[in-house]
Amino acid sequence: MNLHEYQGKEILASFGVRVQRGIVAQNAAEAVAAAKQLTEETGTGWHVIKAQIHAGGRGKGGGVKLAKNLKEVEQRAEDIIGMMLKTPQTPPQGKKVHQVLVAEDVYYPGDSEPSEFYMSVLLNRATGRNMIMYSTEGGMDIETVAEETPHLIFTEEIDPSVGLMPFQARRIAFNLGLSGAAFKDMTKFVTALYTAYIKSDSSMFEINPVLKTSDNKIMAVDAKVTIDDNALYRHRDYMDMRDLREENPIEVEAREVGLNYVDLDGNVGCMVNGAGLAMATMDLIKMAGGEPANFLDVGGTADAKRVEAAFRIILKDPNVKAILVNIFGGIVRCDRVAQGIVDAYKNMGDAINVPIIVRLQGTNAEIAKELIDNSGLAVHSAVEFQEAADKVQEVLA
Image (tube, rainbow, N blue to C red; front, side, top):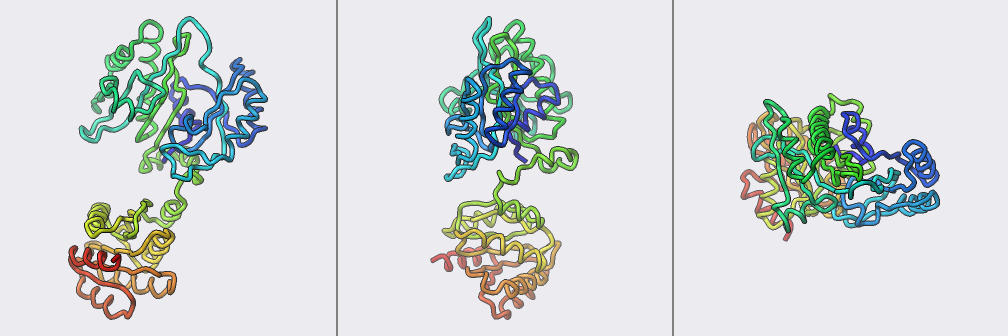
């Protein structure tokens, strides 16, 4: 589950991570009130107005603006709220901004120059260990840094049996070129950040930039936080942070009926049971000359109601030119799935307007094929993978 910047900062702050303070606003009037409150609480005279969408690169798209007075706060908020913000991480049409974060200005003058760093915490799947990735090149796209100056990216892997060790936090601060008060504050920051990552059951933290202020304080100026969906039952309060406006509406509908669905850009809809088989089916579609339009795992119970819900969700995509149903009957019997497909097809009537290829293999597969073939419906049955691929190729031709 992705969070907005202000929500991510709330989680970080709850574990003792210093963050740039801010107040979320739904309109220009609320933005002005938030700016006044921040001025009273922090003494800040300038404010940063940040669009709140689930995407990075907001500044380049015009979603982050500096305001030097209350009039500018109002104007910046009016300009940003309601805009379709386009960044490298949004769909081509962009994402609509519903709210902004009014944040304090932390680039104030002092004894030293502010410095920006990059830092993220995530799982290294190659080693099965969490790692902290960091760089002196904060405020930039980490992909660009990796491509052009890979020697400026450092990683620190954490042994799960002992957690983050003090010497590792000190090594991070040293590699970032810090000394004195900033060095000590960075070690505290890193330790608190990793504690927040573990205890919030997150799958990723990305802080870009981490700022060393002019008075040598270390703080998170941005926060991109992703919570592990499988751990949300342990964090009921985090569940309230889900913003469905930021998610694909078809994926939201699929989740509500218990389907694992991911929207893609292809032309062949997939309905499969099991994630591994779903991945293989997507490869099969590619080999047949098509492109998968989705990942859809119906799970172990593919009855008529569930199959009908899956068909309706797949057909919401106007790019779908055919549907491939690929079921392995281990837990669920193939004949029950076949009957579910037939019943769903009849219930939906003219709503199904694309060819359907059905491959059923496993328990009672022969009976299932007979049910499909004798249904009188425009459904193509297959037994082998290659046969299914050939039929996909045939209907797309």
